[in-house]
Amino acid sequence: MKTVGQLLQIKGSKIFSITPDSSVYKALEVMAEKDVGALLVVENEKLVGVFSERDYARKIILKGKSSKDTSVGEMMTKTVFYTQSDKTMEDCMAVMTNKKIRHLPVLENEKLIGIITIGDVVNQLLTEHKSKISLLEDYITSR
Picture 1 (cartoon, rainbow, N blue to C red):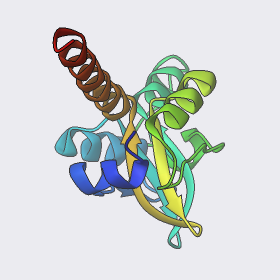
Picture 2: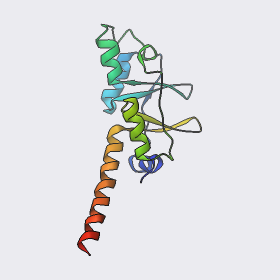
Picture 3: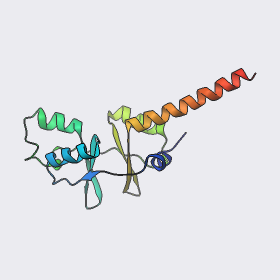
């Protein structure tokens, strides 16, 4: 089973972030430009939150707030669940499912080194399961 570190080597460890004092509108522009569903909120090189499309929909649109006049820091998710590079995809799936989150920052020694998404985890697990099935089919047919 692949670890988070191995997945980051394959997919890359590009991190898209924004500061808490940036406007929600600016965050949306960055998310659209980078084609991502969430940004990590970083202040003084420290992860302080996550701002996602879900935060925008639930905390800005539904409450009638202005994205240009509201800061990311006011609307971000402040409780950040994260993983580490030695964790498995199954570990990540468990956290994401239990906490109902789709983005999981990767930290090592309190330093942000990447992010994985639910799509990354599902794709990796599917690939691993297909490989196991193929090996089992080969084993069965060779008997």
